[in-house]
Image (cartoon, rainbow over all chains, first blue to last red; front, side, top):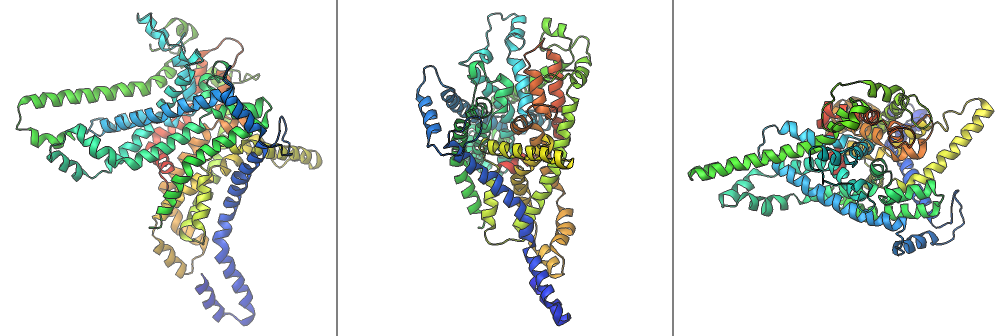
Length: 318
Length: 316
């Protein structure tokens, strides 16, 4: 840019010089000016708001924000609730559910996704039909998924009723109405929605593996099982990592699914921390407690994402 | 894999051949079984939406409707009750459209410009800027939900004051505009990521050459970058459309009541209403209507949809 500007200066009269430099300086700054609004928005509405939420979590805000810092009372309450388990507090329920849901959701999606990808990679006729069928749930909103599965799992209308009609009258499946099992129905619907996408990730990974390696292993007499266990799955490690990050992130953010599928479950027994945060902040007028739970959610994500992003961005220049 | 093994195995007895056939049958069987698992809820939703209430209560969930009726769809669209107003979900469907279209356009254009700057006009600290914007994609929105509600609330009150003073609120406090704003703010991280990764692979020499020829920042963007960005535009638009259409958290927090509710919130209200007889067929029709736009996009441009998801998953 600046070289263009200097050549112009030679042609123009002396008095035009300041204008030219002004223009060239503007040209030089233009990229930053274009980027600035987006960056400013991010700083204010993401990082500024996060600080604001952290601040609120150290006040005793109830219905309205109050800005006098009163210490870590909100965290203390959450902490106490965590171990005061009789009757189980909503927070205790939420983080226990998060553990159950997070673990099963991630593990089953990874296992099922990998399994389906390997099956689909066996030179299957009709792969072009099957793949979109496995993947379409990802295009639906959690609300629609929740509505569909709520119906499907309803003891009086869905699966149980259908099997009764078919003659299996002893079949009993009422998890969606059972406070101890309702969280597992969230796992089922969640896995239904995301596992196809994980399959697609693994399938892309499988397609990227050099065929020569596989051939060499087969000539050495490796069975298909050995081939996958010893060679293919280790080669897919980066995909496992990406898939894990995606799933962990989806799991921690899950909110809609619980609302639509279970309406929170009997007595809030299906709550995840995201539901806890929403309820305490907007419905129970415990803003400080709600903010504290949001901060804990954020910290969990930070612990997972930041090392990942750091390594991804650092590797780039090479 | 098995075909690769054929030459080595072909000399063996026919037992190997039988094993192979059994293997294929098992694989196809499993694949078909899982296809059923994924299709079942959609199938049930679809057939239920065409049944009468009688048939639902006395019939089998999986049976096809005996006398298919469009009434549940018409009722869901034009008559069903969302909260206290009984005018169907059509208004909320349009709310969603009015929210999605501007939000997608603005966030995509900003993302394209940001990606262009971050790859072709690098400055010191560009990685940090990008890193900060990228991380914003991953925060749980719960950690910004309350401050945003407070700000939007104040803006709304200011809008009322303006309304009284000068006769127009300039859109302040309009829930749909609020949601557009929120989705742009929390969407530019993703759109920037998409375009940055795409432009990263775009030959910088072309940009340099144009610069030497005296083309300006915007000329290069318009004449060189944009004409070559079609695929990433499709990916980004689809990704943003799906995400914003399907959003529930922001929608319920900032437009959870009243006439401005987006589709997802309205659907949840229809389904989880506690008053009157639950009309399952209408619920299912409403759910199908809410799902149709994104399903349609998926059917028409599935390849780009998957690419967007992948790009959102694999960073760098």
